[in-house]
Image (cartoon, rainbow, N blue to C red; front, side):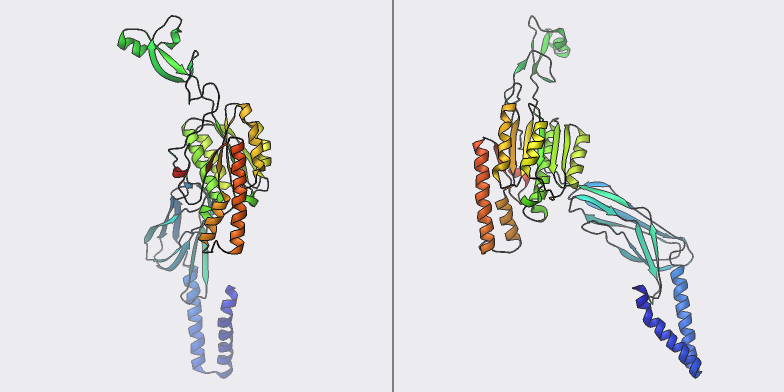
Length: 418
């Protein structure tokens, strides 16, 4: 393409040279010499345009959350005695909001620095390529390019919303925190101090209270709750609804991230199963490292799965142990996936469903696209999904499964209430 742009100039130059030597007119020779001077000068300017130039860039973070801002600092330094008349600087990237480029000029032994800021509006793994610098002559005859630095990968984690009113519903087990029971054995849950009674073990004596009161005081313990969490996030392509941030995929990811954050903050072990392009099981664990694993997995998933939720549950539910809680995040409008949940209560496993009502998401999508819900096709699709959603709710009620409906475009803190 660049050579095609030069073709007219080559044709004009060739014609001018032939005409000058054919006719011998001094004016034509003057134009030939002028052309050679311009072209030669343009070549020299372009060739030296990137000489003695130092450049670099730095980003403020390689890992961020949706809603954060990426700041990139650029620095160019001209160490030459000649000015740089025109430099175009930019960073190619796969970010949804691209890093802005800039065209600058640099005087003799001058330096320029600036900061580019872009919002991170979508989760995922993004590539930022090496810094590209381009220069040329004023006439556009020649160009010179340079690549500076190394590319990098930026991980944008899903936004973690606060859900202060959400509580994990207690499992019906001895030691549930909903009905504390005093334990004869020592547990991590020391809750009160009482006077010593005959038969109390010496290792239960609370020495600071004993010294303060002058009477022997012992610690009392509650039975520890074994309510760890395993999240099942349904990402089958066929059942997803909506687009953008208000799609069932994005809301499901935010729900899973918020619940995992809250459960880990309560020192629970959290496991995760996603049904994206492939089924992924993340074994339960607790602590900051598990938080990073969960958020990195949620940053990479998409609604491109082919495995129905019922199959994922049949394969994944046997991994749960007594005392855990299974949390299912799904927009599936077919009640077949509800039946495997009926096997959990006899095993002492709690169940909660965060249901992304597909009827509500489809309605929101139609309104966002400025379409009328009264259109025959839209009305028929909404009626079918509404009927299917009713069947799912009836099936969940039949098996006495606690359900929370999650609509689109509503903060999770207002919806997720335990």
